[in-house]
Image 1 (tube, rainbow, N blue to C red):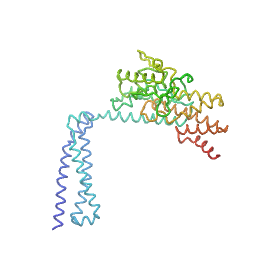
Image 2: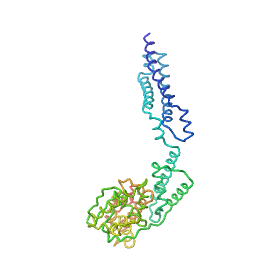
Image 3: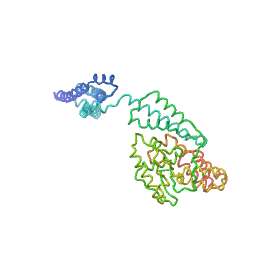
Amino acid sequence: MRRTVLSLVWVLTWIPLLYKSVLVLFTTDFGESVKRLLESGRVEDSLVTGTVSVGILIVAARVFVEVSHLVSVHGLAGAMREARGRTLVGLTLVGLASVVSVLRITGSSRSEPEMQRQSPHIEQVTGLLSASVVLARIRMLRHAQLLEASPEKMPVRLSPESVETAMLLVSTEDKKLELTPELNARVTRLYEEVDTKEQLVVDTVDVNRRMVLVRLYGYPLVENNVGNTATFRKARALELLTWLVLNRDRMRRSAARTAMWDMNCTDATFSTVVSDLRRALGEISAGASDECLPITFSDELPLSEFICSDFDLLVQKRQKFLSDPLNGRDDVISALQGVRDLPFAGTNYSWPDLDGSTTRLVVTAIAAAHEVATWAEDNGDIDALMISTTAGLRLLPGDRDLLKLQRSHLARR
């Protein structure tokens, strides 16, 4: 008698919960949701809720059937012994948790107008997936170029049209991406440019006349000849300066806005960024902000030739070292000592990875480290060997040639 009563109580406890769950499933109105999906291409929250409810109810029903069978045959106490106690309790908790999950899902359901407003369109979902695939492919190509580590096989600078295409893919979550033949052609051109290589082309900058140095290896820093560091009130101002020193061939407002902003940037916002950049440069250049970044009333945004980057510095000192190693040794060593970390470390800039700037900086520094380390090994210059290998390994810790040179030196010592 006692066994029968306990079994009946356990079953009656479950019946209202399962009944409520079944009602929840039917109130989600699968038929209408599927119909609207086929007509408008929109995935509604009710359809998602119903799908999740089906999975949860399957789990709950399976647990209920298995436990009910054990209880009806052995009674509640006997079922716990048969199922070794903990198993039965665990199954029961899983079933209850499943039913409660169904109730919570429906309890937090939104109204119909709100669901229509927040439901994603299937074309938008497809656009996001397509953009993700393209961007992943671009990053894979950049990684392959990085592993080649040859200044003769540098990625080319992307054209403004390809930069605009790349940033359109990045901002797909904020914009509706229409998969059209025109977009397909633009993406094809983007692929072709990303996979194109050329010998390193460097902007002509007189590094000996520099007043301001922009350090790109590591978190970007801007300092003058005596070591004073510029302070930026807006992070975009620092990013704009890094973009300008790497794109002297197209120093235009429209090009910078396309590369830096995922979405449309207003004229007022960009003017504020430029003003903050001009103020920061004026503070470390003895008030010569108009000379560092002249005021213009056109699309041009000219940057003074007195401002250069540590990348420009490394390229020119490397060329001097290759032509005359003895006289160029100290300069290139000083440039390699300025390699603090990966380019743009600690920032969330997206354009350097897409347009190949990061790859160019890393490959150039690795090539210089290899050349100096090899020369130092042949000439017994221990200091130059250690400085160059350390700088290269900061950028590419697994470089086999640099590790081999460093280990051979340590073994000899």
